[in-house]
Amino acid sequence: METIKSDYELIQEFVKGSKICINQLISRHKNKVYTYILLMVRNEQLAEDIFQDTFIKVIKSLQEGKYKDNGRFLSWVIRIAHNLVIDQFRKEKQMNVMSNDNFEADLFNNKKIADRSIEDELINDQICTDIRSLVDKLPEDQRQVVILRHYLGLSFKEIAEQTNVSINTALGRMRYALINLRKLILEYNINLCL
Image (cartoon, rainbow, N blue to C red; front, side):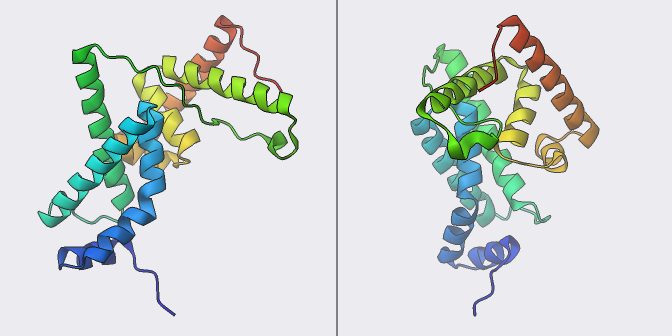
């Protein structure tokens, strides 16, 4: 039986010339990295482009010896993706381009998912759309914490590492995000019940 290699072992073998190891690393982490990018840019084609650019940069950085293993390869990759997303937002802002894509994802799990009627599905889709639009109205630091926590399922420790802040700051941002979301729900008179 073949043992599963750690990220560190795969990186070491890739640096020594094993091309298959980078494929294993990408395969292992592609869902979380792509999901993060997609949730940030909300455009599938753009997310795919940034995803490819992310791993091109990862490969180059690994080959140039720029990655120092600290057991947080995924966090490092997401940081690269995040920086590329920020670069994209800056480009769009300079070009004054706005994306009108309407991709939505479920922010909060719902126990009724298994036994829903069509009407429940439509209502749930509307709730998800409403929540996502409210999350987009949050300040960037609060929005980022909500996405990392509720969409990607990162712990507050991982969020703190990812965003280069203390755990208390990450927790504080989530607290303020929830307070602001409650205010926005009241302000926009949104019903979040099925």
